[in-house]
Amino acid sequence: MLLAYFYGDGTVSSNGEVIATTASRALASDLAYALKRFGIHARLRTRRKRATNSAHSGGTYFDVCVSGGEDIARYADSVGFDHPEKSSKLSGFLQRQANTNVDLVPIAPESLRYLRASLGLTMKALGKASGVSRCAISMIEGGKRKPSRRLLRRLLAALAAAADNQPVADFAWWGALRQLNNLWRALDTGQ
Image (tube, rainbow, N blue to C red; front, side, top):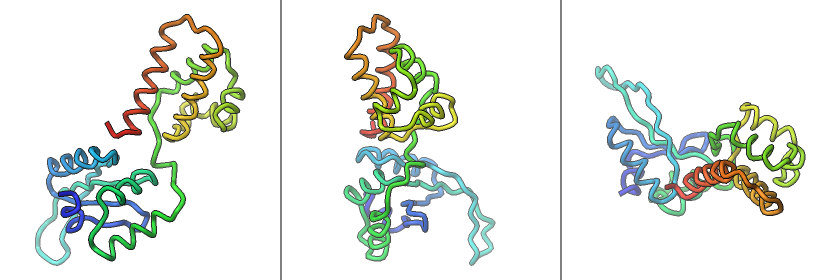
């Protein structure tokens, strides 16, 4: 079903997004849910569109957008395109380096700060353990930056490793860690 729909109404944009357009909000939602079954995260965008070759005044249309290196790769593996030009264009974008700006996780900055501070870790220590700078940790905790899925995975692993090396008696700490882990798992597996 997805292959057929994207064959007809799908395209690969100039910036590497796979986009399908429909006039139906319900169909756009159904397409996003169908993609989610393959672990592909899609965003829905609304736009006003007018036909240039008729007197039609135009209307509201819905774009189902797949972007980000991991999701584009999943799309190519699970759905793809039968159309040779679309398939070729998609393959060209698969060769590019992933852009983490589209794979961001909207965490509450205070959650990371609470977990780190409760373990007595400095920003520098957490950064070193997760492979990023102290400034990156500071920007995430200050709400000026959101971590990518890959970075959040590394941060959570570093926090869990630090917790394994010391007793954490506060059950709220474990609840906060579990909440972030569940968020990361849901985003990573598409559930």
